[in-house]
Length: 216
Image (cartoon, rainbow, N blue to C red; front, top):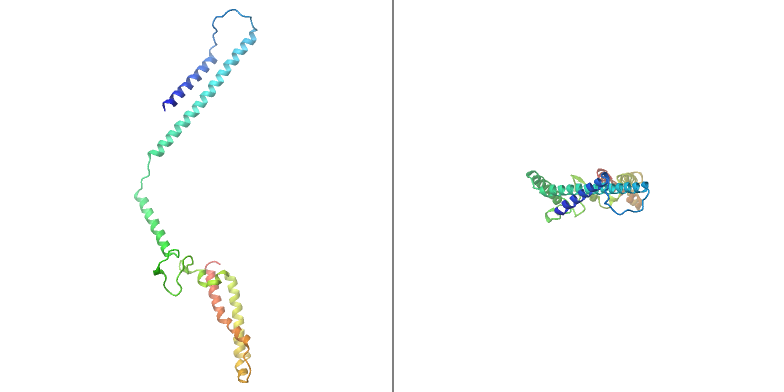
């Protein structure tokens, strides 16, 4: 800090000296007579020298002032930052405990935290694949059907329902197969395959509902 103060003082003295050199006319010591020069040339040279010293003094003073202001600001910022150390308040402590407790509780309930006590029931959750989330079934509960959207599952449900209903009606009422078997014939296998699609349409309907609940 002492060196900086001395530098500022020297620069200020230099600036005042330059201003004085500009304001006060320079004095010449007596010398031997020389060849006389034109008065206009001598006057212009003296005036140019004065203007140069004044410009140099002003520029130096401006730079010194900017440097001093920057140094004072930096010192004040360091003093302000280092003087006030963080101290935890009771409100901060309660907030940390609340957030930490909530985070750990949700993490332990989630599927990423595995524990033997969580492996209960017929279809337990697996890490990264929760079955129930926020009280609703997720898409993981329907297995491979989670790749289908709710619209696609609704279409498949209606299609399987229609084909299954047609197979059952044909097998039992409109083209009775039992009478053919009694007469020595064979069942129509297509009716049997078509009738099996009727219960499948019910599961398609459930999968469509679950996908709809999950916004898919």
